[in-house]
Image (tube, rainbow, N blue to C red; front, side, top):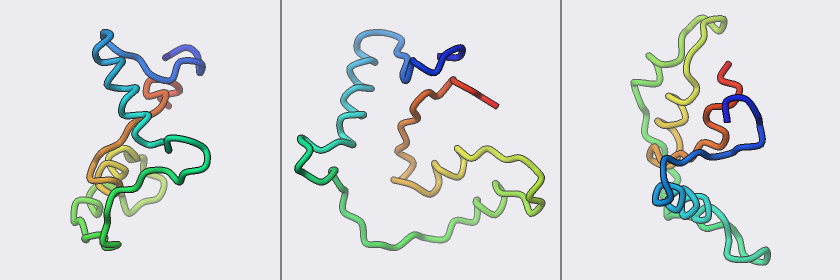
Length: 88
């Protein structure tokens, strides 16, 4: 995965590979006529003080976008595709 963009997920063993597949499939509808699955949500997004510390005031300073994603989307449930490819 680190050298080529053709590998999307890497598992340590068969059990982990099945878990990755199950999680990936949980984002997809059963068929093309259905909408994707959705979890209930009240539409609110609570304020998170930690975001003020993660994102620097200086737009030229780097920060780890994954830290923002984990704090903002789906209660930290994030399945990253090609996690080890193009790490820059």
